[in-house]
Length: 119
Image (tube, rainbow, N blue to C red; front, side, top):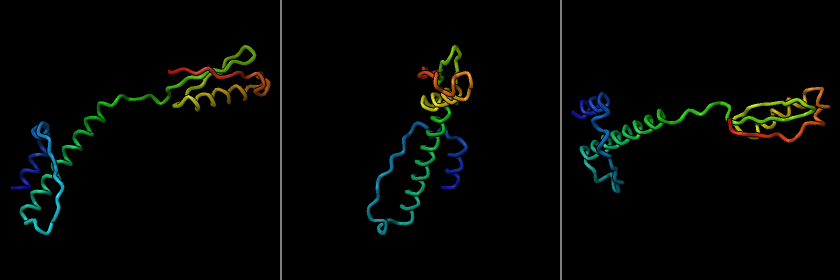
């Protein structure tokens, strides 16, 4: 009977979505009968299943963040060097590296401060 109920629960998760399972902390497990322990395990399994469904639902609705969120630009000798990165610091370093790598920037001497914004 218990196994059948668990199987049915996994086949139809919507049926158990509304009732929130509350778990109480046990005190003396030696005093529990086999049936009590089975019931507690069953309730714990249902609670874990309910939490998994909630986490999966939240993961599916989480906004997808692009790989590159920041864009930074550095100007030197009339040229502009741009780079993107997940963080502001990584985008800034990448833009400065591009500027320093270009021979027309005087080996980085003319590279100014990076101006960054969200992409």
